[in-house]
Image (cartoon, rainbow, N blue to C red; front, side):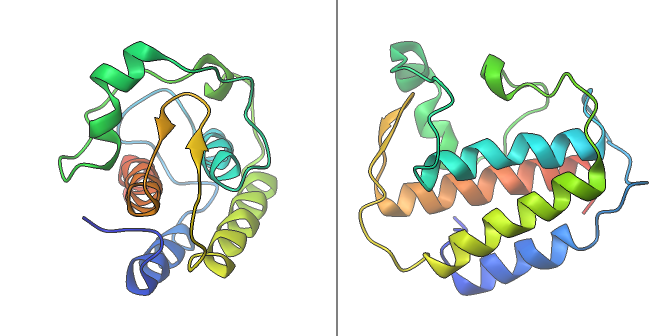
Amino acid sequence: MKSIFDETSFNEIQERINKLDENSQAQWGKMNVGQMAWHCQPALNIMLKKDTYGLKPNWFAKVFFKKAMYSDKLWGKGLPTAKVMKATEPRDFSEEIIKLKAILSEVGEQRNRQGWGEHPGFGHFTDEQWGQMQYKHLDHHFRQFGV
């Protein structure tokens, strides 16, 4: 499984994000590309311990969804999303992609860090699982927009 902490996979993510533009069209789902760029930021901010977004431990998510976060199996379309991470407001692509790239750059600078700690909703992840989960989330949404 690829990981955001692996240099080759990290570089791949950066190349793919640079292929997005304000005209990128979703192949599924309700978000436009600006909303997707906004939606991808909280997961990275949680990992960086910048915000918890009010998430609380969720036994249902831990039991039924946690392993899917970092497994090799691709996520399906229309998976449930935490309410605070649902992109319902219009978002400016140019602003949101700059923010997403900045957060990714920060992750890249820290990718050799050890002990990423607890997720506020899912609980404990190993460092390897954190990296896989972040890669998988970005990959899912980049595939949503054809990159």
